[in-house]
Length: 132
Image 1 (spheres, helix red, strand yellow):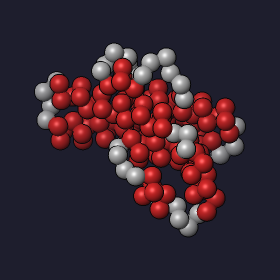
Image 2 (cartoon, helix red, strand yellow):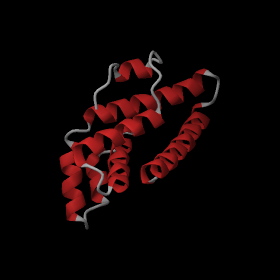
Image 3 (spheres, helix red, strand yellow):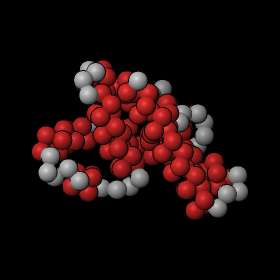
Image 4 (cartoon, helix red, strand yellow):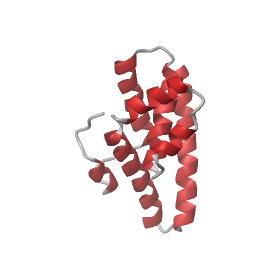
């Protein structure tokens, strides 16, 4: 995806861009590139890949979960090559969410827990929206 702002601006809090907006934009990008066929599953898989990488986990470890599914593995390899900007933006969003809580006086562990819960809620809501 392309934005009129940078991941750095999101981290610094100069731009308000959150998880729900990121998921919405990702769905639009996937719809433009792949059409509507199996949109929900495809969006979930691509988002999971971005989230995995944005949280610092290696791509090969994500891919290992699909080793018994060659078509999915091939798809993930082809998509991963184009996800760097999305991964950076999602990482920036997550960092900002955590920083907002810490700056408000919340202990880091609690901030991480809250952002994980918020993330889970947004993912559930986003999945429901994609599937109608």
